Picture 1 (cartoon, rainbow, N blue to C red):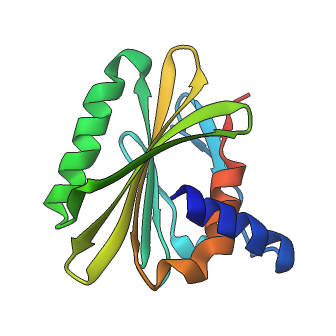
Picture 2: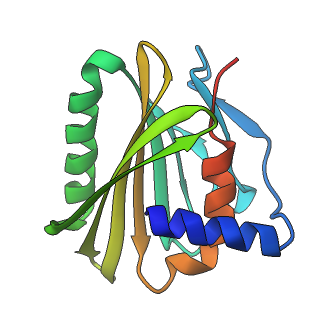
Picture 3: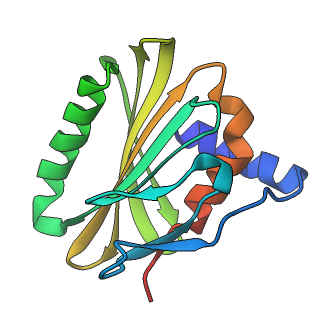
Length: 164
């Protein structure tokens, strides 16, 4: 996922900006973070955060909010969600990296795997927008198709900020 973000960053500098929706604060009752997602990705609030899927369904992205003490539980639930949706993780491909997004340290776990359509890239990233809250990004993208969304993806991830 880190390589995809780096490639997307370069692409974002080379191409005009995509048409983005308004910035969404989530959860709406007590915002912890905000993000800007293109309208074409049909962003929607969930019980635990926000989710979106690229218009061609090549990429699924969710950002869940949890108490810092429950971070492990949220990661387990994300893995169960992927499994329930037919995403099989190849654990032997696991890579770990770190980044910083808008002042938030981000720990990334990335894998290759498969879903009903074939090979996919899978990523889980954890960020802390505050001392007592974490954000878990769940990423699942079809290999060979996800690359055309690099500009949108870097715009989305770059827009993720702690709530004010």
